[in-house]
Image 1: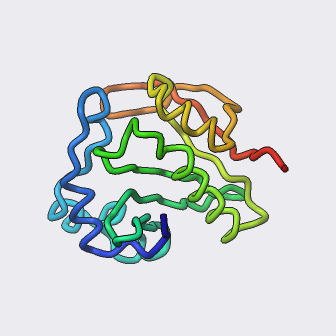
Image 2: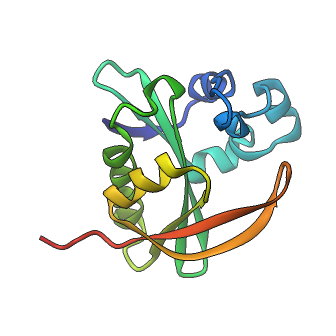
Amino acid sequence: MTICPLEIQHAVEICNWIYEPPYDVYHWPTWEQMQKDEIEFGDPVLRAQQYIAIVDDSSRLIGFAQLFPMTGVTRLGLGLHPDLCSRGLGPSFAKLIALEARRRMPQHEIDLEVLAWNTRAVRAYGQAGFRITDTYARPSQNGYAECHCMVFEPIQS
């Protein structure tokens, strides 16, 4: 897996990803809508500053991440290609991104939010070195949803 800038062709592909229920909450609007509204990676400045693509040895898109800067924290948003979910790639994918965030901002805590019901993601993040530090309700597409905040605390070897 290799990290590279998130290019427009990656963004278009991500907007076309289809996740099976209940993971369909992770669908993005169309690329045209993202550009029109200049939201998330549809905003070229935000895409360049905060988004990265993760590709395989053949330069095929595996997933993406947002490295969102906060005061003293870099919050990660991760997306793995739907065809690759539940195939054991999650822990190494999440750890690669967390280590990249740590490399870019070594003084920052690295964390992420995950929907509490998403046990496969919680498990993958735990295997990657993240630990649940808080659980709370936050607004979502369907009202409030319970989320875990998980902080990257890899075991030192």
